[in-house]
Length: 221
Image (cartoon, rainbow, N blue to C red; front, side, top):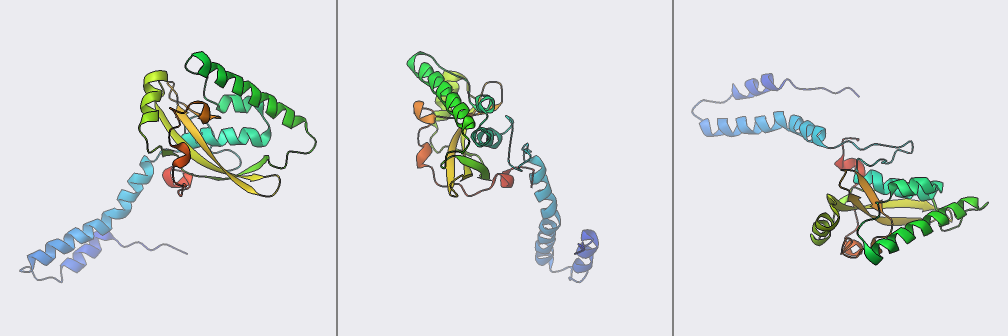
């Protein structure tokens, strides 16, 4: 269907010419109202242009370290494709020191081994992810503690979370809440086991369900 647009200046002049000049209050209110109507689409375009673009993979969902949604989806996609290297690339680097760091390093190794073992199976595990089905927009945690702690202790620039919906091999669906971290290099990475860092993931599982699709907060619509 063709789109018909009104010449804003002509419409404004035509309407204002029917008003009597003594009615200056009405004149000004109409002028303001018309200005809002005329420039509303322009302002909407400006807001859309200011939204950050998100890289998309062949499946139409986010990918890459440039966005929190991309990092979270790449982590899920690594399990879908049983790609250990992709898992390592999507995961946040080992950080901190002591037992906590060693626990995280060991966990990464265990997950890599599990992914490789799963790839060798002729029949995938029924509860394993089959495909990405939905990616919600990234959100900040309600608590300020995790971001402040991450910045002070590990030079993390930001901390958010992304809800990613997946289809499982058994025909059911699952929603994975993924903690994502903007590292000191300005890139986003996913934390595959936020429970090992309670100070970074405070309140993660208490956050309300996500409602906005990732496309609603980016330039790719």
